[in-house]
Amino acid sequence: MDHSDWANRILSLFLCAAILTMIFRARRGKQPFIRRIPGLTAVDEAVGRATEMGRPMLLVSGLGENDLVITFQAIAILSNIARAAARFGNRIITPVYVPQVMTVVEQAFQEAYNAEGKLENFRPEDIIFLSNQQFAFAAAVAGIIQRERVAASFLFGQFFAESLIMAENGNMVGAIQVAGTPSTTQIPFLIAACDYVIIGDEFYAATAYLTREPTLVGSLVGQDIGKAAILLICIIGVVLTTAMGPDNPWMHWFNHIWWSK
Amino acid sequence: MIKAIGDWFNGIPEWLHRMFPAHTGAVGWAFILGSVLLCIVLFFLAQQLRPAGRKAIIVTVTFLSGLFYVLEFYVPAKIVNGQEENFLTPFLPVVSDLAQIVAAFALGLGIYSLVTLHGKKVAKGSQGWFYSLVFFISLIAMTFMGIWNWLPVHKDIKVNNNIHDILYLGGLNGLEGTMFSVIAFYIASAAYRAFRIRNAEASLLMGAAFIVMMGQVYAGQWLTHWLPTEGLLANARVETMSDWLLTRVNAPAVRAIGFGLGVGLLATALRIWLSLERGSYFDREV
Image (tube, rainbow over all chains, first blue to last red; front, side, top):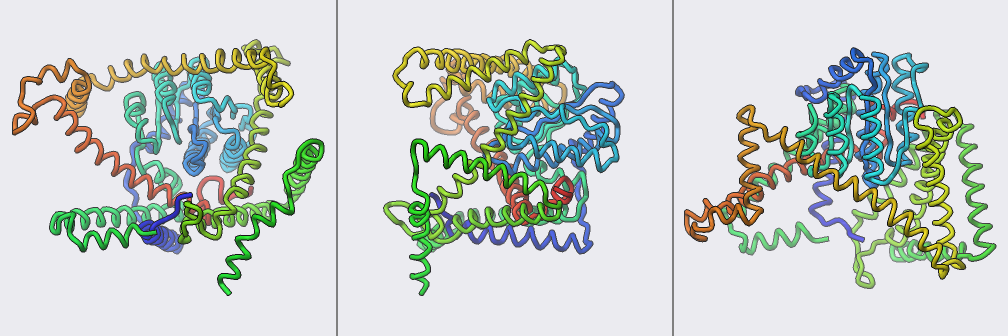
């Protein structure tokens, strides 16, 4: 089993401290500014369009099996979309890939409908565990998209090669599509096939953007501090390596300490 | 004193193995059945708790589970028998087994969902009921053959292995391969839309894609093969330009996205671990 080195310990500690500090600051009432994210602004547009067309919406929480944190984040985003759907009276169909996730999705969506006072419109039978085989799942989702002629499709979470099958089928039926994934290899495919794509850490900023909950907004600011710190380390590293040369004994000593376990 | 505590800690996994030795045969099955029954009883007892009580249990278990993995990873380790190990490493298999057992229960919920959904369709004879029937036949056939093959007494009966291979390798694998190959057509249609030159960004994308594609194929490399391999003109060779785009433009962008994702993942994991997650379902009754 692999263990942490000192570089990892120091950086993780700093990042955790920054995130927690900002969360508690935001909870005390300091609300920071969040820039506009077009993909998330499009959520209401997509839900509104589905309402006008009288057709259902598709919500997929990805294929994350080992990375459940990503799936939890996806469910958090989708439950906010489910809330909008409950408000407008849309039907939502949610195919699920990971069996463990199904009950969490069911509970989250039930809460979303309950929060809007529309619990009677909640349809648990539309949250379907299809298969935990990648392409069997993709084929089934493509079938749902074609049969139900979904008006909007939201693909959030971890995706692999099957992302294009789902996104292209959504495109074929003319659905407005919003996708967000941390899988960098799938971003180009989703950009080609979807109307809006949330890339990189926007995926983790989505819930903060949609809810403006102080804890999440504070966490977002903490993340930005962390990224600024990483950028600073990169710049210092570039400057020092360029000025001193990679074979400098001081650089060797620093590397030895920094990467030691 | 610290060494004595460390030794005591390291002795716990061995003690656990002595307390709960592996059983086979009827005793083993009795233990498995007893454990399942115990879990079902615990599940129903948990259902009787008030939401606040359930939430307290979830928060505590989440924190302790997370703490175990955090400490196991961050506490400095020594090399023991060629492997990095600290005082928590011997417990990793035990905790991983626990996680697998919880996942197995969740799989049962997934199967329950599928059976309910397709059972209703077959019972009502609603649209597509035939496919639901196919689901039941496939589920029963694969489960039966899987268990049959797993039992050691049937290992040498070739007919059973053949049926399993026909169903799994010939059926499921073949179907999966078919779906995978369909992606080629989807890539073509998506690429056609993405590369249509409509504005400056699309033109840039088309140009970059053209160079990278040409750099990967022999025909593309042949176009500039007459240029020298060294010196200033070497930079105009298609494969050099393709490599420059991939390693100097694409790779830094992907790494930058990766940094953001890593920090975002850490923040989300931290919120879930410390039960600070808000705004969706984490702050409400569970």
